[in-house]
Length: 312
Image (cartoon, rainbow, N blue to C red; front, side, top):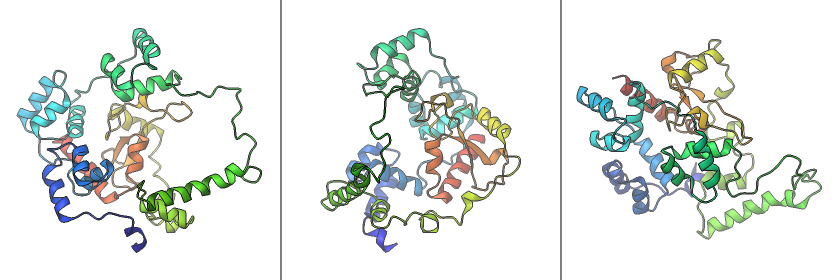
């Protein structure tokens, strides 16, 4: 562990107190600038301090206000009015059946996207079409728009086709040069690297098997319960309105790198693969699901409070 600490900037008491007092009052970006840290670092620390969710019970007045104004006032404004997080409010709205149904794209919207995706940013297109940024991005991806980049067409040969590390020096030395360059730039203070990244350069076997810092005794190899089948997983997705319960992206917005549709993952809240009670299962996109591999105890508490808070 001592090897890792030399690359980590420890949090001071003053920084933690500042974060506790201002996390829900000041935008995370501003806190990051104030403390000289990254946005991700602030978010991760806030999660560890249990600042990312509220365990307050929803009052009848709040529920009634939410039902009357959810489609009129933005969720962020309502969240600020109640002193709650935006994700918490969206989760409550979903439990109450207030979330807007997935709206199919019209021919006019598709034509507008095709004609303007090289001229206007996705965020501006999203505002004009009254859609989310991820919705516009995924639709462009599905339509195989190159988004200003050189697209790869079938029949074209890849530059590294038929090349291996044995017969091509670029492949053989590229990775090694990249690692040395990153280590040098970090030492010069020009870039920031995690301690794990640096240790991986020094010891290629560091993250393999039992040497991995997140090794849990081989739990990932344990079998799932018999009842955890495709039918149960689809029931959970339908219960959650086919939306990730962390970032609330719709399943239709998820794609693989090869432009194939990706279904939502079903996560076990307590990380017990044999506990397939529906109350222990939740829908997550791949990105959010991967984040749960870190700080598992905090994720258990987070999702349990989120689920219990939505049922109150």
